[in-house]
Length: 204
Length: 350
Image (cartoon, rainbow over all chains, first blue to last red):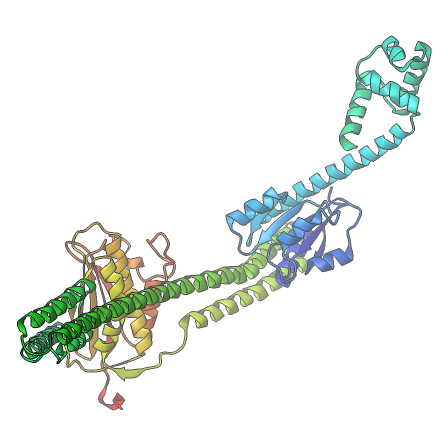
């Protein structure tokens, strides 16, 4: 998992930045370090799984403020906070807003590395789900309107006869469309189809 | 003791003036409004009396005015009546104004004291926050670089070049941390004492003056043993007063948090060779066994909202002025804090 992912570090302190870059490099994780949130935004993100290690107190925009604005900027990276002077309420608040870890400097390297692995896994999972959703949507939109109608009723557990009555078509038509649905959606069995449509409902 | 004696003398003197006024007011005609001069008595006595005794004195003055009116039989009666009324109104007004002014002054003092304390605590809070942040940056870098270094060494074969670079960063960041520490130390050392020659007990009295309200509010009796004719001392007057204020405040707080019905603070100064020693003894909670050694350490406190700096700052200040500070528990209750200040040498007198 370490070959194709990146950790973004934003910390205004050059010593901390250099040390973090080296630590991550020593365990084979690629790092991009920035001294301000603006520099990070200017550079932009790579299209690979990653996570963000964010300092709380920085001149200009603080880490906490940036974290709050991330959703609005369409940045979904998991965030790990590091701070020189953190209090419990601040940490609780950050976690409540979705940060995965809040570490006080100086921090234990294993705790940080674990959090980073965890963050990257989360991002991979998020990206995978997103990609799957997209693919599934493509499959779904390849169905004709009539096929989609049949699919919706099939997964509700209706028999072909009932579907035919409901849609006011012949049972033969239902059978043909049903076979098309199974083929186009790449579903082997009925439970397969049910699972796929459930995912569709979740990701739509 | 000397002060109390002087005050008592003044009161006796005022009583004499009052008797004279009464006689003059009684023997002269109605037209002579001698009773108005009772206001002078009230004005003079006001700083020495509590609110209640001041009101009593004013009542007494009014009663005497009325009595004089009854006993006097010479002159125009309506004028006498008018004069008596004017005198009584003058007495009432004077007393009322004094009481009002006193209350206002008290309020102002309270507000000032509160403000000072808040400013002190807030200032320190901000300071410790930024110190913690400043120090933690290089510390975090050092720890992280150290970890990176051991990772590089664990590689097969070890990446010595990267490990060496990490070590160089560690050395650099350690240097940075020690610079910050040095800066903080110079900050906490504060300014060098600005030493002058002054009368020690006067400085003590000034601090007692600002703390008296606080002690009265909590029903604390202050016993003073500040003999006159002590040689002047050579030190920074403001810093020494800070120490006195700190110790007195601690004594007051120790009594407030104690359930002991005896609520006294005893302050005494005495000359011991070439130093003058001030001792402050309170009947408060005392010093729990085992913490005596930590008393003067920075950030060491037993108070819930304490910062643990008061006594450590006091020690720094006393030592900067060439003195020593010590503390010990007292039987059967309370604590005793002492500190010394050097007596001024002949060539330091100006």
